[in-house]
Image (cartoon, rainbow, N blue to C red):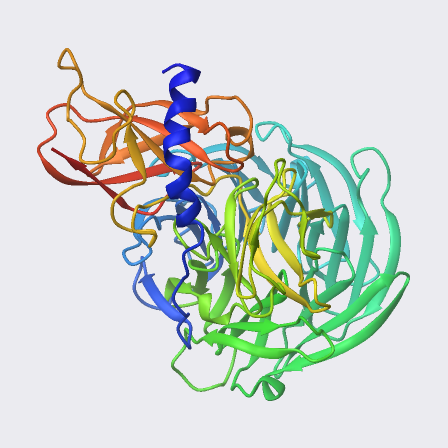
Amino acid sequence: MSKKHRLRIHAIAVASLLSLALAAVAQAQATLKLLGQLDPFEGEIRYGDVWGEGNYAYLSSYTGTGVMIIDVSDPANPKLAGFYNPPDVGSFRDVVVINGIGYFSSDTFRGGLHIVDVRDPAKPVLLSAINTDKNGHPNVHEISVADGVLYEADSRTNRVKVFDVRDPRAPVFVRDIDANDPRVHAAIAINGRLFTSGLGGKTDIYDVRRVLTEQPTHLGTIDSGAGSHSSWVSNDGKILAVARETPNGDVRLFDISNLPNATPISTITAQSLGIEAFSPHNPYIVGALLFVSWYQAGVVVIDITNPAQPRLAGSYDTYSGTTSGFRGCWGVYPFSGFDRVLLSDMDGGLLIVDSTAAVTGPRTVSSASYKISAIAPKAIVAAFGSNLAPVTQAASSTPLPTAIAGTSITVQDSAGAERPAPLFFISPNQINYQIPAGTALGPALIKFNSGSGQTSFGSTIIASSSPSIFTTNTSGAGEAAALDAFTFSPEPFNATRAGGLPNIIAVFGTGLGADATDIDANASADVQATIDGQPAQITYAGRAPGFAGLNQVNVTLLAGMASGSHQLVITRAGVSSNKVTITIK
């Protein structure tokens, strides 16, 4: 289809899409909700950590069932899609998956680290292994992978092993980092810093921005307390959360903005949260929220907008027994979206929960689907809250302004960069804006400046792609906002065009990704569509000219489509849109 056709289609659709972006969303539920669960192998299997990427969850086990690959495209019905379980290695504890390449740590002696191609879930392929012959740890307890570099911790020594894994088929040993604690349990790399958590009570911080070529610079040591298990840092690099895995353990927050001096901010205990629990395990900071997998309390979500006064925002308990030991929730992975947080229970397997009710502050959702899920750079979004702006006013110029009537929004991404957000519309209870170009993937903190002196904070997760489709009834469900690509008429559509070939429709949405939004590019090779579950050809996927953040996807109808309603889904990078309908005459 020509650019001219795309321009005309867009002009017809803009007015309706503007109204769609102004629709409200329903109030969230009061408690976290279980969406689905899968226990692949019955009994006390002792599952380990969990990771997510696209429509798949990766669940480790340290009693002989390896790493399970689970299809979570339907969170209510997770299905085992495959597993990696070499016969001579077991006790897989930690798992990381990046762009379809899995990094699986084995705590079996000489089990080492396995790098596995999992792009075909049914047929995982071992690409390489790191063991003592490559200067790796014989037992690998925890791992971290960032910027093509892998860090191993064995929980037995003070030594962190560093490998160049930019070529996953040929990992290269780079160097050792010897921390101050005699037993480094975890080493987490975030934004050019490495945080080592020591069971002896010390947390070391290193500058690893040039770790491939230079010995890291030691920035400071924190006396974080015995049993320091793992840690996570805020987007701005100023707040560090350290979880202590010990009976009646706690999560400690530190101000690390002035290293080497770190200042304690607060200590979060089960008692301070009003829960019964044995010990925290893994912490993750997502914007103004702290997610913690907490033995015998499940996932605990804590509002740390004011880190000196953390408060419980929500929880879901995966364990029904009494508080007596290391049982229940092992891992949490919140980065797939607030509406599909992944949990691993040591005996219950994988659980998927909707944590929407625990999200505090103004809530940012897709302006098309209204999902409070992951959001792509350059996507059109809507934030709902109170006292967001002093007036109701729409943008009157292009490029979009970053302030209207003194009201503005900044997005602080996972790399710590802050960017002003282009604004479509402001009102006291709703602001429509665009995720700024260049926003890094991962957790993001959103700062709302009301124009009347009030500041509030929200949280979101940025993903490379999170497609959503506008609908004509402004609900995110029902008839798609779409036009016949040749006659430019709305639904219902002809199944065929002149000459009898299947018709083509232009579907409007947002969230395809930065490389397919606000620039002239056709990403159709990386975008998929299904109609009633059957693959449909895409001839164009990219910018809808003339409206910031708007995507257009031209979908060829299936041959022989019957009259009536049919379900349409758009998918990119393993993430699927909301289900919408198209009607055939």
